[in-house]
Figure: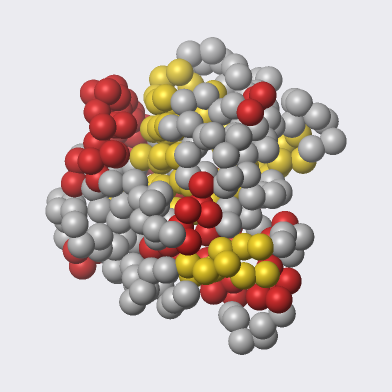
Length: 301
């Protein structure tokens, strides 16, 4: 669903930092101290089996955290999961959700980037990193075949807790964060049927959309049309075979078939690294200047 900013306004970056990370076992740790980040809990066994959705939901022993993992593995939400027939379920549900998703838990190549978000078209998932540590991940349903989400490097722009889609004024979008203003593309909370279905945007579960809403940085405008500081970098990559079965069904035969490696992330990020670091430095300088100005004004009073 496309939403554009009709009136650009000067906004200040709202920063809320959540320090969470994990250990991958095959990537070098980031430059941050390990004790700054509690480790994700990995399952003892990573394997999947086919289950009947309604029968599995009827099991009262299954807790909310386990259900959330299974919904994410099937790239869906609770309401749409209940409508499904066959679904895939991890044999061992003792781990944290991110450990069932394809993004690497540590990427040393990203150690100099304070914040970055990746959206994988092929796996219909996203991962958010701080200094090379995966701090949040979840499922997404991206653009359908006729309205595919564009790929490449973007930066977060403006955000709104609630807005109306410009594609259909009956669609109310929550926790919307724009990444391509003129194209009206961004992420937001909306129904996840379990496959790419949107009109170019990245649909998310409410908890994930809300998390990224507060975690990512907005742009800063020097006037109504001039961007002074860009927001958080967002890389959308890969492609989706709309004529093939859902790719996560492959996990039944190979639980690592969708894995995205640290080498993959490096290859995807490398063409954009210089621009990302330049914008990051600019954001830091601007933030420091704004803080000094605010302090001066405060001292006057």
